[in-house]
Structures are given as C-alpha cells and as structure tokens.
Length: 208
Ligand code: SF4
Image 1 (spheres, rainbow, N blue to C red):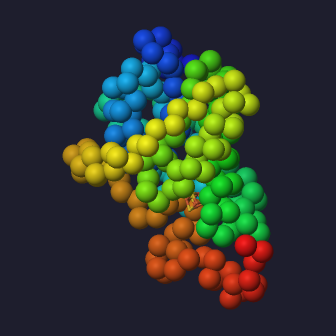
Image 2: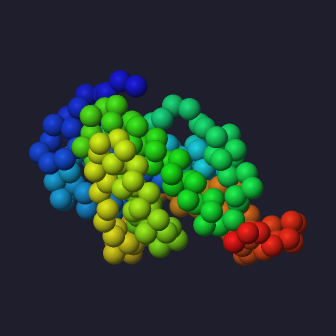
C-alpha cells in the first residue's frame, strides 16, 4: 500500500499523525473535527468486513469517500472486502456482545497493522461516538492492540458529539444506514428483536 501525497502531508502536520478507523461518514463528522481541533494530522482508514451485504458496504463507503473529498481528508481503503473472514470469525459466537468483541478486534487489528506499516503515531475509531457500541470494550481492545504495534490508542468519549453528528449528517446530506452493519444486526433492526433469543429457540440456552 503506497502513501499518497495527501497522507504524507497529513503526517507532517503539527501534532500526532493518527489513523482513524472510519465505520461510516456520519460517525466520522464530529470525530474528525474534534481530532483536527486538537491538532492531530488525521487520515481515515476504511476496513469494515462486517458490513453486509456488499451493496450496503459500497453505499457507506461511497458516502465516506465523497465526504472525505469535501473536507480534504486523506483516506486509505483496505483493498480487499474480507467479509468471509468476519463470518468465519463469528461462527458459533453470534450473540450480541460476543460477536461485537470479535468485530472490534478484527477492525482495530487491521487499523494498527496499517498504521504501523505507514509510520503513524496513533490510532482510534469513529465507533467511539456511538451510544450503541461498547465504549469500554473498544478502549480496552484498542489499547491492547495499539501497544502490540508500538502505537498509542487515542481514547476519547466522542459521544458528547452525538447530536452534533446528527446535525452535520443532515447538513452534508450523508447516507444514513439503518442498522449497525452485519447481517445479524440487520435482522435485529427489522425484527425489533435480539439474535440471542432466536439462537435460544434454535439451539437452546448458550454458555453465557
Ligand atoms: S452489531 Fe455492529 S459491532 Fe456488533 S458485530 Fe455486528 S456490525 Fe459488528
């Protein structure tokens, strides 16, 4: 993966060069503004094999790319859609928190590997803005992975910008997804139910 001139420029800005894992354009809005205001040189990183199906993945990615162009955010896209890796990783572990732990790890591990390869100082993720994500788990996982790659994990409670996120999403007319990303979350959203209950009715109570 080669570094574009924009990425190099963002890395030479004052402050730390941070690789920001982006889950979608709406969650990136406030997060990028906040990081830039703190003096970070921000580059976005797209790696979301959890987003299914493919067309939904592409819609979210296109929206992110056009927003990035608008705000002059350099972006790296991991070129392979590794959806099978995600599905294999969560087989038998599809319950809500269990699958999310795997999902966070998969995305943050790739972010850290790419950040290390390109010489960034730190990583973080737009997932930290969402009240639907487990912030504590994200922090713990992010710090552990970053340490293993000789990086810092920038933890910040971006949730305070949740309403600003909504405002910016409307202002920039960004694509608004209806579910978190994986096919399990899609089922949960449209059935107004939790997958855990479906699993219990299929296979009986789990270990948890
Ligand atoms: S609900 Fe969201 S965070 Fe959890 S596994 Fe699915 S896509 Fe990942």
